[in-house]
Length: 154
Image 1 (cartoon, one colour):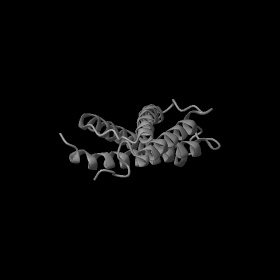
Image 2: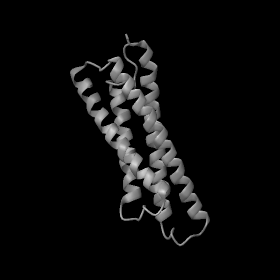
Image 3: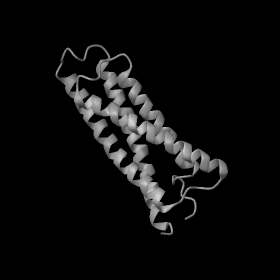
């Protein structure tokens, strides 16, 4: 089991990390660009978590790109444990943020409030969808790395 497709240091992991970064940036842009998101705590929570996920994904994408370039994957047990733990925490935070944002946006749409005029709530829903896709990629990369973790020499 030398080369697991999505494990840290592989080209599959680089693709997963870039996808995470793209979806988290898209979620941030849909939420923050020219609309007031700070009125609801769920929206602020989504912005915070997507900012953290973007930084985490871009950092690990640089590690993956370096590992792919020199063709030597990073497989130290301590680093892999840290990556698995970080992915698990951020994936659960991203799931919580996307679900809470989607539920608040759905509540605002069905309550016919004046806060959701025009396409405002549609942008909130798109932001939640992008956050959910970022969660899916983060969770899958954490599972790939968790699968590889017991195979490392301790």
